[in-house]
Image (cartoon, each protein chain N blue to C red):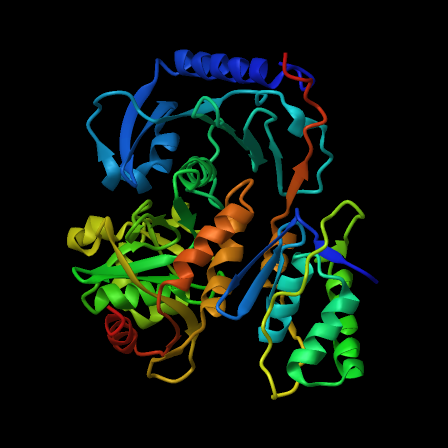
Length: 139
Length: 339
């Protein structure tokens, strides 16, 4: 487990305030990340190595590296299981940690809230996306 | 017309097919609309069924003058739809959607076909003869408007909007959350409506909510709680699959409709079992989650750029959870307090 990136497309995401909204447009499922999850998401999107990320969060928050690593790994496992992130390719530029974490208050575990109401509607009224393979090249 | 043909040739053929449909119908009837400040022409080739589909836009109709920025041909057709790549898909049901390689999309759904050629700013809507699409009575223009206006910073969002001379409130939430109910309660309480099913969020220097459709909807619960609405129903033809009655509210109360107002606040509509309504603070994330996924779903090809723009607007706008009680007057009071 080294680096990850958002699985875009079909995943779109945006951070407002200290929350992040993620939408999987194919699955019709959307998610809200809490403050901790948003910070981690921003770092993952920047291509920060997971080991480097864990060290940085532990250093800033004052929490133990073991605690942070367990939470970050569980969080990433969930993101992977939901198809929200994929492993970054070698060609992707790695980034350095840049997010400021609250100091001296410990580490709040990242949380991902999952909303399926849109998916339920999609199942009732599905939209099938088809590729452009049927088209010839432009002349 | 071959699926494997060049897409620009395909667009030419669609235009010819639309012209042929108009010839069969006795020619086009051109109608101009000013939507979010843009002149849009609908070229109507077909009988009253199609004209009825456009009645939701009557309030935005303008006299013809000059060249339109966007032209949409709305046609009925006997026999086969224009052929295209959608016919390659094997479907269990629902819609087929895909991109045109040179920009634009197609969407085949319930006996109707929408194609938008972005480069030519030309849209087409085909419908099988005699079809009355109860599930999507506003279907001819929504996907095309969503795409074309979105490229101009105006976003078609599936939300209701009400306001007055001070500003407007966007009523957001999932389908069935009670947006239409809250809108009707607000109008009954003296506010005006900008839209019900959908409105336009114009993300310019000053964010505006703008009207697109004048239709409103009312569930059985709304009709029970606001009985003055029942006689205003447009009738069974307009009743949605979900049981919502359609009401052309401005036909009965012209002053109830306003076409635009600056955005003051976002209300995330929620049902509350008690009689009283209440407002509690919401985060920008709450508001974005209530608005953006549904807006993205409704616009073919919408993605990260639209989400970023919606987030920018949401981040600069106060947001609340609007817990709507059973007393309609309380809903209106709560919303008016946001203006």
